[in-house]
Image (cartoon, rainbow, N blue to C red; front, top):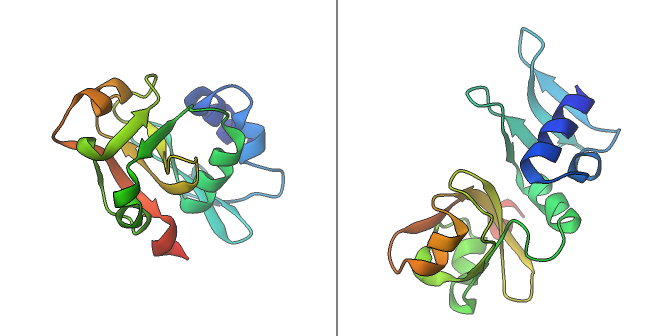
Length: 152
């Protein structure tokens, strides 16, 4: 099970992320058929494996670990300073509030929402590509799943 979720993480987030995201001490919640449902570490949810497409959705703990692992601007969406409290509270991010976004982000990708100084704020799913987040003035950019203030 551990090697499977590490492989999925490597494919989804980049080579080498799986081993850092999921340490050997992870526990698993499985389905009745033995498939992985959730990955836990110290009682906190790192990720859930979506049954319909086999991709990982990250919990807040998983997002924080991914933030530490991914370097530079990879997988990140930077927000304007005046909306950081809303995003940290778990509110959705709109294109007009995006300062910068990784151009390799595709719609449906798990993304890290960060302040301009790269402080982690939230984890969510990109609604549009990174390029579109910058180009568009209207519409939702990221459907935020967990913000740091909502979970603390």
